[in-house]
Image 1 (tube, each protein chain N blue to C red):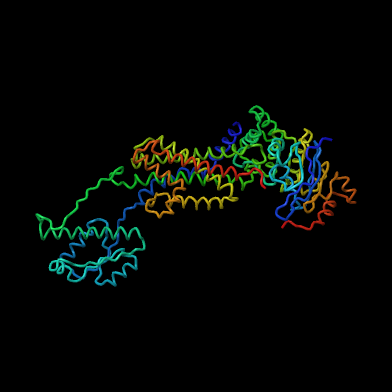
Image 2 (tube, rainbow over the protein chains, first blue to last red):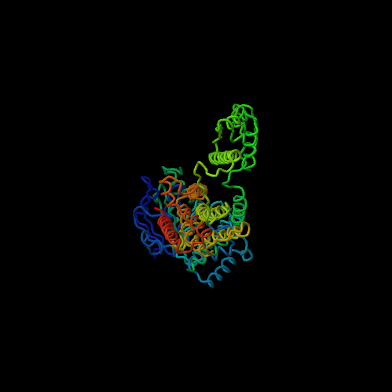
Length: 246
Length: 373
């Protein structure tokens, strides 16, 4: 199986505090990889290192075959990223956001036009190309942000709590988009706090206090922990945590 | 280059859509250039004069009339004792008290010598200094007149007299506005340049959109150019508006070429925008960047030579002004506007500006990291 992400002893220290403490894992091509953990467990920090937004303290990692230390700008060409904070331009229209992000990833005008059409069509937003993003409801914004994060067909897309604060219907629709992207061969790396979402993943890892405490398919994890649901697995693991959000 | 096109497109759209920017951009120059030069004037007028006349003679009244007739003073208070006069100063009714002692006329006529006393309220130093100087001049004049009256023109003046004739070059009418308007314009362009640019980037930090930029393959210089160019355009627009107002409203036409001003302004703005970028790489919130750029531009403006001549500052402050880009622009503006200086005359200033631009932008690029440590 081809590996698109490898991490080996990846660590991030802020002073004496190890936000991410020697994590080792691989992500296979085309997989939906759930990256779970309580608040403050170090998920976002780990993700930011993989995306080339944060310099690791030690350990090795490659993303899409590129080294996170030296080839971070090459990584950026091959990934999409959707941060916890909604980050499309609210004062630009849907179409303008698509054009902008397509443009900075080097898409041609023709590709941008095609992508705009497909993307808006897929989201059922054909007639809303000219409205400002700030006028959209949150659930729609998140779907749009995801579609734009993969507008350049990256090898991997990193999603940091993409469905936070979104209603169940919109979450369901969001996951349909994830499946479609996955079917196109895009590897999905997603963090979430919703355990039903964790069950949609091919494999999940659970981070506790900066370390990865468990990594397997949801089914195997439930078996191993004698649990009826991922919720129980998560509670068993996360309760061991010493450190808290604050 | 293609990336830059998309960045510029996005930036310009956002600027045009922000009503606050457009409003500030048009209203700020209007107010600053239409109100300030008319209101803020170096000339001191309307000095409130308190008189304590113990003499009540023809000569004392003549003196008072002469002072009032000068147009700089307003007689606000007429008291019979100095204590009362001082009271008027305390109540802020008078800025200056002229005390005419008893037997002023008598002493003047008999002894050829009479004392006068002037007390000045020096809370406002400029007003006090100028007011004191004006009144002394008037009294000296008065003295001269009386001597003439009594003695007539002497065929041989017993005292040698030096006659001074002066001619004011470059600003023959000492028109204050010609001097001030270009300076205010420089301040405006500077404020737009530094605070608009830095606020804009910090806003992207606050919104979280900068993260989306940092995770993309955009190159640092593309991002920085994408921010520099739109704000350079805004500042040049303000400069053009300002020069138009200066010409239409105040009739200020530069003796030199407009193109000289624009060439210098282009380089100057690179430096100032670089400073704005630099601030934005340190500030995390718009409040921070606003306060810091307010502080920096205030120091720059006060030490720019706009309000007080650089030559009269202490040595160390003069040294500081050499590191203040605003002082160069004010100097150049005045040179081009009033003296008609050309590019060769301001080559040192242009060179210095290139230095500033390199320094600020270099530092900003070094300090701007797509990946944090």
